[in-house]
Length: 137
Image (cartoon, rainbow, N blue to C red; front, side):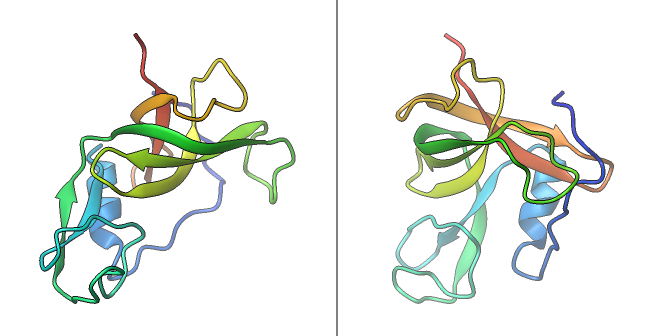
């Protein structure tokens, strides 16, 4: 398990994001998939950003992708975050991207195109965050 700081800022689940956070607590990564055009997208929105359909559902992701971009934060923007930490955009294999943290990387920042997979940061009983770690070969 990845160590968490309990007083870190917390996301505020909404009607659109509640299912995402429920799945994360179960260590399952999900993403919105449009029922009309089949595109995956993130963050959850009222309408599909591709075709504007209101008909979408959460589907399970395999949690594997590659680093599109990464940087290291050395000065926390607010208390509760331990520095340094990595922020990255990960391109998931199902065709969607996610802004996330990279953990357990031996290179700072993690190089572009590094293969990563979802890991889980259990903050407390109510909050689990999806983070990504380099695939071990």
